[in-house]
Image (cartoon, rainbow, N blue to C red; front, side, top):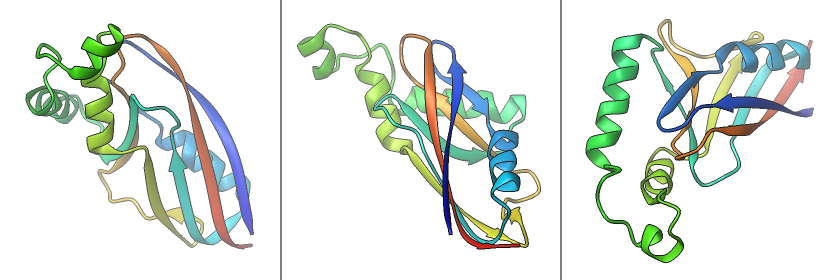
Length: 140
């Protein structure tokens, strides 16, 4: 059984880290899959998905680390070519990636106690991100 759904997530400018854990849990609950997997994917080249403890200190640490790895204030060839100023956004998104795969056991996502699912907008403009949620496995 494969169930595919989508969700719209509003994001702000810059490194906006949005907790989407409850959204994906709701999709799992609605799917009635007991054992299998959930695949999450965000289309677009300036957004990413990851898991992290969604706590203000850790969120700030992640944003700071991303800034150190791919700073927004250095020259990017993409910016020279297109003039849109979001070369750093593309690099950041590529480093984290657009998808996650989470096992499902007994109708629950196999996340750690302090682990949440987050969508990150790296673009230099606010976006309405589409999240594709695909649940595969055995139903109740």
